[in-house]
Image (tube, rainbow, N blue to C red):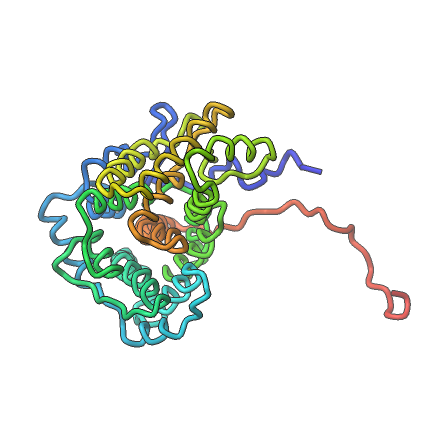
Length: 378
């Protein structure tokens, strides 16, 4: 029986202060440091958003140049890590390999226990630079290909495509990916961020906090939802089947991924911006497959809204967008990490600036106090 004093799932509980982001109900928008996320995604590169999340303000050109130079300086993985990654189980989910690789980064770093503001920022930029290469190298290794080293000549998003595919796609594809990076970068006290802050609150190191956050994000009720969306679209198969599929799923009370949100009640403010970038990318790609998934998405969206008044969340347009960019479905959540490393580490830095150990109480529902009987009486 539910206890009215218990806030199950910590719903409605404010556990701490944050200046990083907020969903503002009065404008139905997620904001980073006060800026609407959709405005940032449209007007800024992801690098500018990353700087904002860590530093509190958008960068000047000179600040951005210095920030990008610091990131590029950290590009490249050690021969030891690449050797270990080559021995990873090719059947393991990429989130498992990413979790292990980030933990490996921590034990390679002689400054792991330096939790000064400067030390934390240095390690944050290090992971920001190296996690994309981990994801790209794992993608190639599990497909029997050699990793492609990063290059200093390309910006953040372009470099990721270079490391995955050996080439940079059309600007509209880069823009769609870059928009997704900004939209996924931060979202207040979500499950994985709270996990990172909880680990950090024990004064553990930042690599441990990020490793734990990756484990939390792996779940299909959190980061794994974008993968589930693409599996759903593949199951539907064709636009002419989409409406019937949705109506049947609703009738059978199936859990339909990519719709609804714990925070938003009038629609996810990130969706229109991501959907617009997705549509522009589809028009540039122009293949029958691209048009098919766009149309399936459109019909499923309309049917759900018409039938239930439930709107899609960011995972709904992001899943098929990543698929059409050429990424395998199991890569979608690791790509989420490529972005969210900014928000996670910003929260770790914020947590440790005025730290209190996170240690909630629990409502015990087990057996009453009892004595241990002798072994013959059991």
